[in-house]
Length: 235
Image (tube, helix red, strand yellow):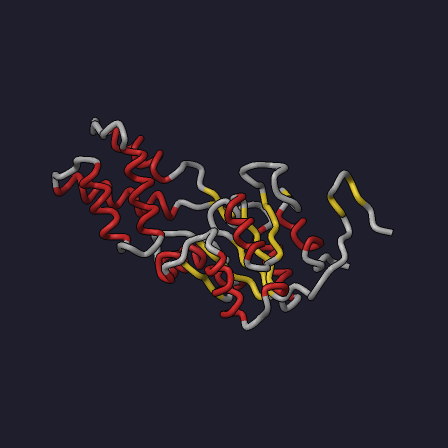
């Protein structure tokens, strides 16, 4: 007999076996103690720089364009510095370096490495679908430093493929690269729209520490709790 709480079925009938899991990066595999733009703006203010009132907005707008592949990271940083009115060469260089350094300052959530190691043992492919202005190679360097790399098979970076979540096409691209059907792939994210995009593409979508709790099911908060949700719990 299947158990339910409210409308959430705790033991749903399963379709095809999950053979691959794609993770969002920031907010799922790792987090930052300080948001990149907040950290960079605080550092600039500490040096007495006066940034425009819309500095945060312009940063977000420019980075969002870069995530879609319309500019390189270097072009993006130059556009941000121009929008912020920073034209002195040494200061431009310093702020550019701070943007790069703040982006790299990541911390893994508890249980990530052990869970990915278990997925590897079970023969389940693991990868990342990330909306980013970074190259896949840059993010791979972060993953090497965090000891994530041995457990990852692929990275799809939005800036390189010209597709941005929640566009279902980016999830389908991941599925194609895995050589599987959508029903055999799970996506783990925290953003409601990205989760809905994955579901629209036919993937099993799972919410980890969702930005809007209660709006998307199933959701979980302890990383190893992923395993039973994809039928891969230790037995």
